[in-house]
Image (cartoon, rainbow, N blue to C red; front, side):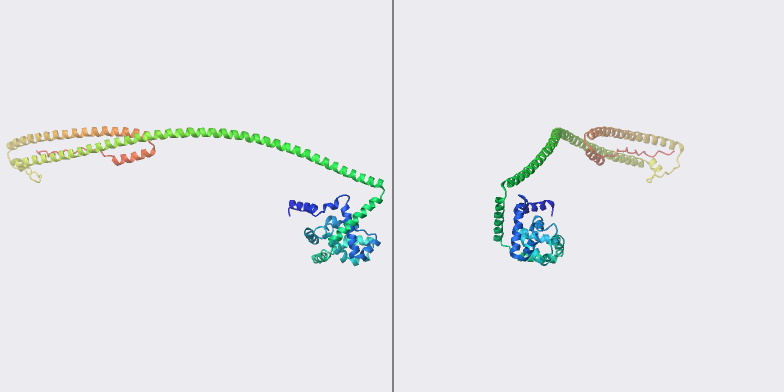
Length: 418
């Protein structure tokens, strides 16, 4: 059992079971208990009571510890536990039951003992008998079977009080007043000592409370300072949060504008790229038409050359050279005419080729200008946008990038072999 609960049980026994009354008024109530025990012995154990009277063995010589300590001073705990259980159930009168049971079980030994032997028996031999739990249990059963009427105890108590009153009346008044005065002085000294102890305890408690109060005030000051600092930090944090929210809103607005601008630039770049593709498609179509026209003209020239008898003799349909046996003069004249004709056709073809190259150069310049504009726009967009837009534009550039057109190789007619 914890100490707090054990102390509460002790308080209940002292007050609720009137064990405290045994210690008051010079043990007056305890002497009443001794008188009651002797009366019960005279009624239930007359021979043992007569023997004790012969030995001048009074009840306070052997039974004082039974009442004051509830048999805990000498007897084993196995027996004391049973006694306390009965005490809590039946009250303080259970001590008379146990005392009579002890006297009955030890009657033979006590009748044979003298004064010293009886005291030694109560002090040493009697507790040893009940070290075994079986003996203690039998003793408790016998104690419960003993009848101690409450009316008789009340009667014996009244007899003791009447006896005490007669003794006081027979006593010399001066001695009675001296004894009463001495008792009052002792009570006064005891009360003064208790008062001093209470005053010292009160002063000590006040000092301790003052110290605790000072510590609590210091701690409260520290906590108030910490609270003020926390409030200041909270205000600063809220202000910083508000500024961050404003900056976030501004950044969102800037990003929104930049995003709108980037989307506009993307649309514009997309339109330029579409126009560029359209121009490249038109140039490619025009080049193909010019190449087809040049091819048709070459076929016409080849047909005219094949229509000429002299040229047809020189060139076969497979383009092989067939030498003919002609005179050196005719061969020189015909060769000069043929050279002039071929030179004229070559000049015309070179002129057409130069025009075609000029158109290609103009187309390249236009494409380079568009590429330059597109690159400038892409740089501006890349500077205004984050990495995600950069990746997107790079993917667009990769998807829409075109290779520059190569100028077609002009097909020259085979030179006349001399």
